[in-house]
Each structure stands twice: as structure tokens, then as C-alpha cells.
Image 1 (cartoon, rainbow, N blue to C red):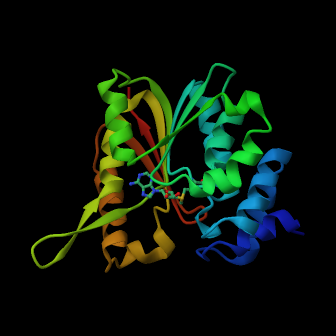
Image 2: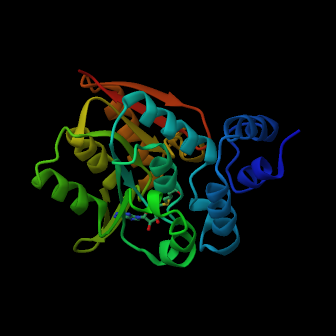
Length: 245
Ligand SMILES: C[S@@+](CC[C@H](N)C(=O)[O-])C[C@H]1O[C@@H](n2cnc3c(N)ncnc32)[C@H](O)[C@@H]1O
């Protein structure tokens, strides 16, 4: 029997799996969620704008496992929203660990996330929330000499950015840029998780700029000899990528 907690997660999500399977996997995978995580999840669902942007709880759990496996102290979190993924990584990191969490907009973080995250000062101290384009933030970390020093990166922001040329709209593919910059910032053995890698199944026959960009990145990663990769059918798809030694 699925808990209310698992059902709540499922209700926000797309259906790439039968509902019963999603409920079961969510329930089994999220028993170690802390009360603070549950509070943030509830508040995001109740009060955030576009709550479906919240990362799936089982994906957050999986990321925590990657932090444990890599024994890293440094994490990249691309796409803060209400701070649920950043909070998950902070819980798993050691006391001197650091999450760099990036977003162009802190409205939902300030309204929904921070009042809850601030209750745990030892976790809050591990998270650096940076405002601005994630490409700029990642480039500034590289310019600051931090290449090769991160152990885990979660890519969960915009897929493409539209921009106007003379008479047409073109798209900048941010997911591919995030991948390249994260790979540079990761140490060998480091892990990237790219969220929404199945994009509701639209990658199978991509017709729009966002699904085309995600399909393109999936194929680029698959052909990249610098990494091991597995495209997992979990939630909306997670591309699990490990930087080779
Ligand atoms: C899916 S939400 C992130 C969810 C969060 N990681 C979680 O697990 O709950 C995506 C976020 O990416 C942010 N975003 C959009 N474009 C961005 C950009 N160019 N740079 C950084 N963040 C961006 C949005 O403002 C939004 O808050």
C-alpha cells in the first residue's frame, strides 16, 4: 500500500511507468526522508508556483547515494527552485561539504524554501545559493580554478533558451553546455545525473526544440568515450554519467 507521501509525489509526475509501479518505487525509496525534506516537499506542493518542477524524491535519494559513493565534499546543483535538491545533497555531505546551487530566479526559494531550510543552520551553512545563469556560474567556478574538484552534479534546469535572430527564433541548447562545463568541473570518478532525460517520452520522436536538445545530449553522452553512461527509466528519466579515470 502506497503512503500518502508517495502518492503525493506521484500525483505531480508524468506517467512513463504504471502508477502502481511509481507509487511502489517512491514508497520504497523515500523512507529515509527527513522531516525537513517532507516539510519542504509539502510546502512546495502547497505554495510554490509550478510545483511540478520539484525533483522526484527517489531521484533525490539516488543523488544522495552518489554523494556517498564518491565521498565528495563538493556538489553542483543546477536548478535550485525551492531548494529541495540542494537540501538533499546538504544532508548527505560531511560537515565541511559544499553545494553550489544555481538559479536565475530566487522567488520560490525565498518564499517557500528558505523559511524551512533556515531551520537547520548546519545544513544551510553547506549550501551556497547563487543567482544568475548557470552557464555563467559554472564558467566562474572554472575561472576560479575549481576544475576537477567536484564529485557530483545534478543537471535540472532549462533545456533550451529561445532567442530572436533577424526573422526567426533560434534556441540555445543549455543542457549540452551544462554537461560540458560539469564534466570539466568533475574529478575523475565523479558523477553527473541529468534529470528529465526522457522528457515524458518525447525524446523517442523529438519534434520540439526542448525534446530535440535532450535527445541530442543523450546521444552525445552515449558516444562520449570520456564517460560511462546509463539512461535510467526512473521518474522522467535520469541519465547517469560517470567520468572515467
Ligand atoms: C526543475 S526546476 C529545479 C528543481 C530542483 N532541482 C529540485 O530538484 O526540486 C528548474 C529551475 O531551473 C531554473 N532555471 C531556468 N533557467 C535557468 C538558467 N539559465 N540558469 C539557472 N537556472 C535556471 C528555473 O528558474 C527553475 O527554478
